[in-house]
Length: 355
Image (cartoon, rainbow, N blue to C red; front, side):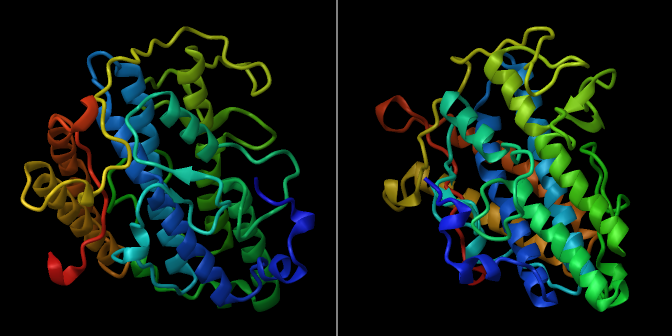
C-alpha cells in the first residue's frame, strides 16, 4: 500500500513542489514517459481482441489508445513550450514489464496482457479519477490527475513569479499542430502561453477521468458514434466491465444505465503474459519475430523523438509506423507458445547502434 501523505518525510514532500523551470521541464519529461507507458499495455489488449467477436471492446480500447497518442503529443508540446527537449529514443522509455508508472505510486504496475478481466482491472486502476479534493502530487502520485494538477500549479506559480514570457520561451516552430497530426481523438493544442498550456492539461485529464466535479463525460463526441457524448477512459472501461453504456444523466455514483455492451471473453487471443526475448532461444521463430517487432518499435520512438525535436512533419511517418506495428503484433499472436498461450510483443529497447 502507498504511504499516506502524512507519513512522507518532510524533505520528500517539499521536493515534490514544482518551483523552478528545471523542475517543470523534468516533470513534463516524466509526463511524456507516463503517456508513453500506457501504449504497450493498450496495444497488447487491443490486438488480442477478435474484432468480429468483440467489435465494441475493440472500439473502446482503440479509442483510448488513440487518445493516449494525442496525450503524448500534448505533453511534448508542453515541454517544448517551456524550453525543454523531449527525450523518447532512450532505454528509460522501455523498462522490462511488469513495471510501475514513471515516478508514480509503485503499487500501480503495468503488464503486457491480453484483453480480459485482469487487463481491465489494470486499466481501471491506471485511469482512476482523483478523489474529490485530492492533493496535487508531483512525485509518487497516486492518480494521474493529481500528477497533472501538480504541473498546473507549477505553471501558475512560475508564471506569477517569473512572468509568462519567461516561462514560455520555447521555439513555436517545435509545436505539433493539427496540420501535422491527423487524428479524431480530441483537441490537439499548440502551446504558446499559460491559457493554451492549461487547455492542453485539461484535455489530457478530462479524456482520462471525465470532466471536473465527478462527471463521467470528457467533453468530446464519441468517435465511433457521433450522436453520443463521450465518456472518459475510466468510465469506458467501466462500461465494458459492467456491460452497459452511460446515458446522459448518469453519474459516477449511479453507474451506467443505458444499452447493454456485449463482451465475448473467449474471443481473445491467449497471449503469453509479459513475454520477454529471454523466454526463447536465439534464432527461434518466436524470438526472431519479437526482435523484428522491437526494432520496428524503437524506430518509431526514433521518429517520435525527431518529430518532437524540431521536425513535427515526421509525426505523419510515426503515425503510419504505429499502425504498421499491427501486422507484426497479430502475427506474433498467431504463433503458439507454451501452455496453450500464443507469443506476444516484448517491447524491449534496442540501442540505435544495433538497429
